[in-house]
Length: 323
Length: 267
Image (cartoon, rainbow over the protein chains, first blue to last red):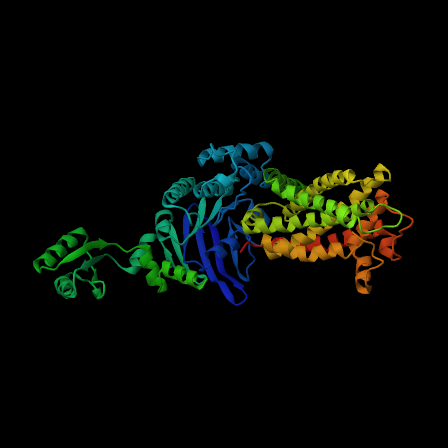
């Protein structure tokens, strides 16, 4: 199977700030690649380079077999881009927005109209088709923006943080739409800072930090890289913490970590739900007072934390504080 | 489809979109015409009572000046419009489409030109009400409006460069105001230039807005033998000077604007 997106050693600098620091990426045709990283990691810069919007300093990139610099014009006919914030015109109606985009893809007058109607139907915007976008909800705007990216039936679709800023319900709606799309064979490059989103949608995930890919694989592969399951408990007192450590020692496959202040104990284990039963029995036998106990599988959050030394959320709040 | 025809066709799609916006948000055009109407009335009745132009009514003298000022201000919409589209990510969308690189700019400047036509019509009616008259032929009058609109169109391309570089509609608005306001005042727009102090006089005489104003005055027949144009080349050959100014501005700013658009990314 051919590769829909190939990037080799992409470098982009803004003055002394390095936005892309030798980014390498390969996305096979018909798959969804999730580009996962915190704000400022270089996700949007990567999308802009690959969609011909941004010139870069060195490296090479090709999308759908076309060079992003030399064949830019031809390339634009085959890609769709849906941005971080919905790039739709507020004073136009939903129909007018899509019709305009169709005309600018040179579909012709009638085909543009037909395509606009078809997409409005598909994205559940028929009732709102002839209303100004100004009155649309955030979720409706994103759907319209995504529809605009699909007007010319692109072979490669770029979704730059498609659900950032959406409420949970609209986010679920967007996920359904995206999943449906990919079932149709479109190659998708999706950027996100939501680990859950990459987990649910992407076949392959590239974790990106400071402008380069620091890890790549399926969601399961990445999780395996971080390690297996663990028991997480919160106990009532410092005495209980010590007792827990003693009682569960035999179950641990690696060092038990403890937060003395919150009486939180994490025990790396291997063995599934039976192990949880066993643990509860052991604790009960020693009369440890347990407030909360659970068996957790690693999340992409853990992956991210392990790989970068900081969590996605941390970096975000640091930036917000800095701003 | 060859490149040029395609650029025009894409430009027409963008222009149509801009005009739909004007129709939906009429405040823009209402305020764009209200202020010149206010200027016509203020100058005609407040300054008009104090300013004497030998051999003619001040209101006849005034109108070409107000027209010139207004269309130049009208051209600044190009800058604010593009800055707004940048801010909202719409330029990114356009740039990701397989359309001509010049199309967004062609569409924008064209729709702003049409806005200026509407504004000129409204102002002409106001002028006629307060006593302005055209004393030349229909074709000459048309040429007078043509010279002004051509100049405004050229300024639009300059404002496009500003709008794409600055990226904030508010800043474009304020910046263009502090540049354009004096430009349109240190000129022959509202008073004769003869009594201005030395450096201002030289500036006013070579100010392209003076040439445009003088050209329109002559083409409308709003001149008087008792008040001849100063003896400097652009004001003695105002139509030619205005057209030359416009072409030079276009030759400089069209390539600059397209270059700026090519690398413009919203943030």
